[in-house]
Length: 188
Image (cartoon, rainbow, N blue to C red; front, side, top):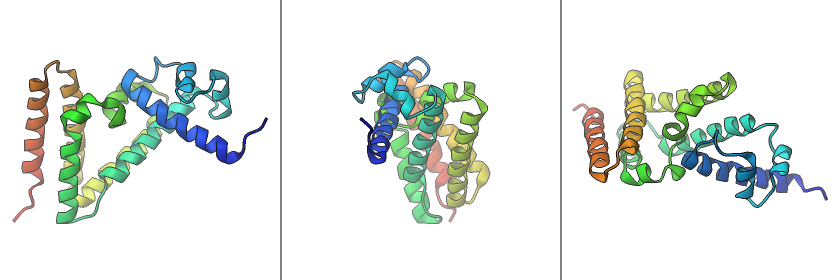
């Protein structure tokens, strides 16, 4: 029995969503096609009707996750944009984000895998990161500071996730948030 194009698209979207959560929780490279397909109630054999390879799924998954992040973290220029950016950074650098990697940003969870991926994956990732940096640069009117904030957020979240105690995690997050809040204050 053949499925409609709409059904196939819905299945592909479910696979991307569930694969993103699993990959961010367990790592993409160590998760097999069978396990990815099982989460949406299909067999591993059905995978190849949606993606030519696991690498193609990885590339699309990363791009999708980063597009979603960009839509949440983007904004408008000026004080309203800065305020929204500050709210987003506060949510990003939170214990909830540290403790729920499957629901958060793909970069701190899969960054090492992206760095080892083929050039096609890294180029697609780079395009999305450049878009985010450009959006933030426009909001804060400083391209270098936008890179610094991006690096600070990723590094802080990764470092907080390495900490065993909630107290140490909160210290890392709090220090980063204080620095970012001070840095993003509008110049009077």
